[in-house]
Length: 126
Image 1 (spheres, rainbow, N blue to C red):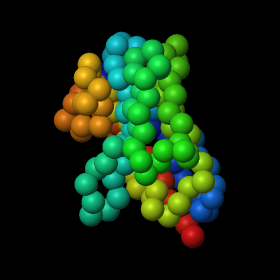
Image 2: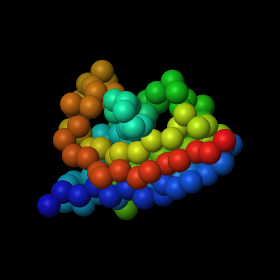
Image 3: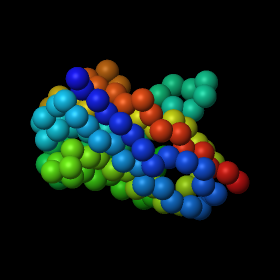
Image 4: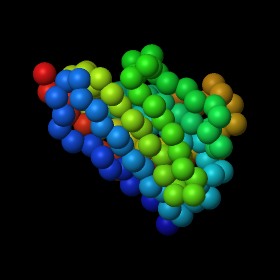
């Protein structure tokens, strides 16, 4: 059974930081590109960041570039998203995803990912 379990969300003040974690099981973790997406109420799910299998290729959405860092620890089957200088517009449910992806153009595409976590809520107050 494939499971992706996110954690680390919560309520923070604007300017604060959070580190989200996603632990995967039931897959060969190092074989998958890992991504983070987020969805605010009434809005479409949007791409945040992705990291390649061994970690050298990383992409960020413009909305988080310069404030966020994605990383992975294949020995722990875990991908992280460190978010700093948080803004109210970062408020959303954050989802971890795993995809057997080989084209860079597919990294931000929701349909390219095979497995999804249940999400963790991030709320940034002003």
